[in-house]
Length: 116
Image (cartoon, rainbow, N blue to C red; front, side, top):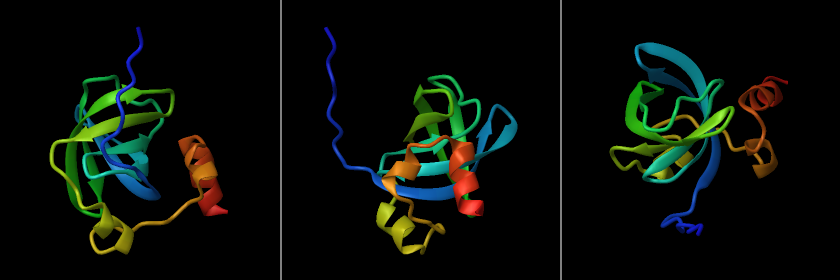
């Protein structure tokens, strides 16, 4: 029997450039949505479930663990809560809003749409 857990908090759709550090290597990533407890990261070759990761965003390091993955994206549960409002207002991290239809694209398609 499949049991679906309901999210406790809605997600805010955004696009933030980040660097994901995994097992001593760094890769480019895009944060496509966020809540105070987790983020959706779009990255080529997403790490496997359970992998500890660090996201470096504008000099700030967010530590977390991969909870699920697909081909070019993964859900990351953060160790500490973040203030999504600060992300939106640009006080903590520069943010670019994107339409929801773009947030569902692959990381490369999203970056191409930003670069023109």
